[in-house]
Length: 467
Image 1 (cartoon, one colour):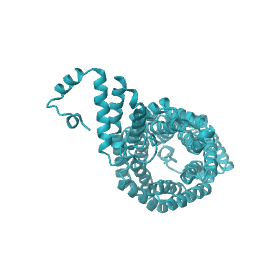
Image 2 (tube, helix red, strand yellow):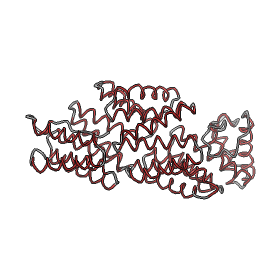
Image 3 (cartoon, rainbow, N blue to C red):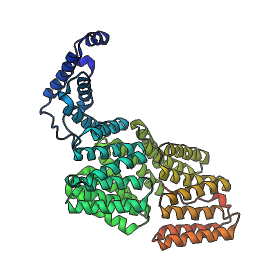
Image 4 (cartoon, rainbow, N blue to C red):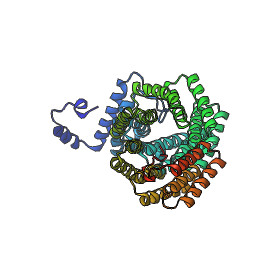
């Protein structure tokens, strides 16, 4: 509610002067009256127990304004609205998260986490703050909140939140590339959700595991987990949950060589997110769809999808999604030979990921920037960047990507020192094969054979990029 609609003054300054003349006790009562009037206008009174519930509440649209009135009333000595102040902080956090006002969502959630007496409320608020921080791209902060929430969820009276807390922490670990830790957390979250018969958390755990298996080249496990998650989503009748699973399943088909099967899945999910006006999900799905279209040879459509994705992410302040789509656009530009534009876009994405303290995504962009420098005829710079990317992957506990980077480093050095470089590529390919990453191993060896037998210069080669 805007001030001009709330008070009968002809000018805001006149209103302000009249307000300042009131004693604190009257100011407090004025703000309490505003809260009462707005609440009475609703079809039903606010449910104060739903402080951080997922479900939208009728009062949510007014939550921030009501929170302000409650705070000012308390500051002027009226303590009777303390419970309502906490309630409206929780509802404001939910509303801001929905509207992608992420910094505000995080702040309101932390108000609840630090000020509420009930462990379940504190835990849920911390997980909400973790969501907001993760969307902002600060995975260190997101992880810290998730760890605090998980610690609270160990208490017997809050064990029903254990699966949700473990899964939030798992996603945080996966986002920064700590794959083995993330897998353990996903498995623990899945076991807790199955034991508690929490269908939505079971579905979320399976979806998380499918994403992790995809990233570690475990195709059969990824598809099995995603398929089970899809059955659960359809059984629950939740279109948004189903769309989220479809995006993951599409990525699995794309990564393992079936882009034509991936396309209708991704398009179906995109239609749901457009219909529901879910901006962040729409941005990410457009980026995924662009990768599929590029793989199918539809480069113009892919570029249009990526530019729309970047525009949406920028509009809602989702800098992590913007950086990911910017990297994907850079890969597309590299593929069509626009190397200067590609390298500039990669560098911008790396700067954003560095600022957001997201080393995993930063390493992926660095990996791809190295390939662009190789293609531009600068193998020394390319080798330094690829080595840096590989070291980051290894430090983050992602041996698969570390080995791929090591193999690519060998390919980059192949022109100058063919025998040792070829041996390095074969060694990396064998290490990938030994850990079940057969496709990654085959890709490296195929590229090695092509370069050894090609008559064209090495610096004209395409290299295997990461997305």
